[in-house]
Image (cartoon, rainbow, N blue to C red):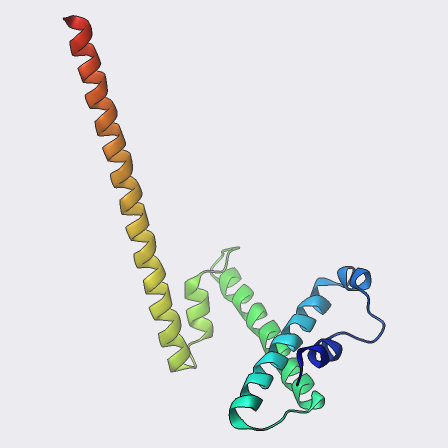
Length: 148
């Protein structure tokens, strides 16, 4: 499937850029999901030497979008149950608990990000300490010169 035909499948006939800009966020998101699914189907089709019909792409897109809506509602409920207004990584892990491979992947990525953040924090702290040390040394040197 060509990119142009994917775009045609995503947007209803008669859409212009100005009409698209005024779409509701939900419709724009749905169109983006549909386009992405179309691109993924295109990749699979070229790898496996098969084709996907527009109806198949639309069905996969619809199921994907509905599942994402359910995930979003579940994440909101997990956070609300914990009396929080922000979704955190623990909520995402709880959502992924039924898929061991997904839970493992999310946990590993979370640990990578945490480690990276700790390293950045340590670098920043060291840089501040070095800056403070240099400014103290400069100040001490300045007071010694003024005393002489």
